[in-house]
Image 1: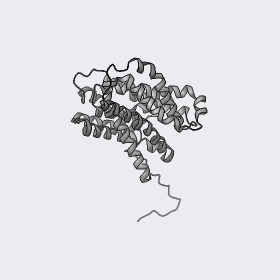
Image 2: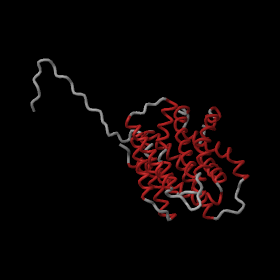
Image 3: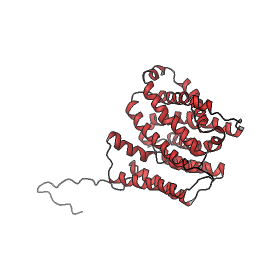
Image 4: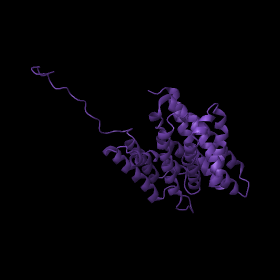
Length: 305
């Protein structure tokens, strides 16, 4: 059983990751997707790199896979979610992120040959129905939004799912904090040319700057520290409960601070995604194996109690 301190850490992590969507909603329009993503990664790298201590040699030995994870787990998803933030509610972006374990199950089957039983297949079907429902209903779309917002969210969550499998396969012996700091540094360096070239012509507002600082320092740097602390203390399986809580906090912050409205379609789609993810990941298993009963010994009396 998880300790109260670990439960508090898990809840704080979900709250921070859920807050990233309202923060992006606030500042994406003023900074632009590329500049926002580059600045976010740069802030996180600046805060995480001093914590590395003697792990710099590890980064030098593993710089190629760290670079790839920086692209697939930070640079590209940051850009895609910032792009989506300009077209759909922060609440809806957070709900789409809950589908990450669904894509992880599909990628695990295609790449690593992981088995998908009937229960997991049913979960995948339910989860994808939830995604399709949200897309078809246009729930949470802003006036004048383009059709790129939803594909951007889906692509970002697929990249997160790929990164999880890649990290598990190639970073089993690498200190997690080194991967986190190195991937943020790689993302910042990759995005720097485009971020500087496409910087906003007008100076962003203090509100947008504040949202950017919170996004980089709290929702990225601090969140990574909490994430790897949880993995070290309770293991990866229990830490993966976070994606189930992120949509709830994303919707809560969007309603409280941005005045967003949660429609019936959004609630129903979210429920399908969460239920499907719970089934696909094995968190919920309606079919429990029966306990095996030993065969009676020859000559034994039957139990009549």
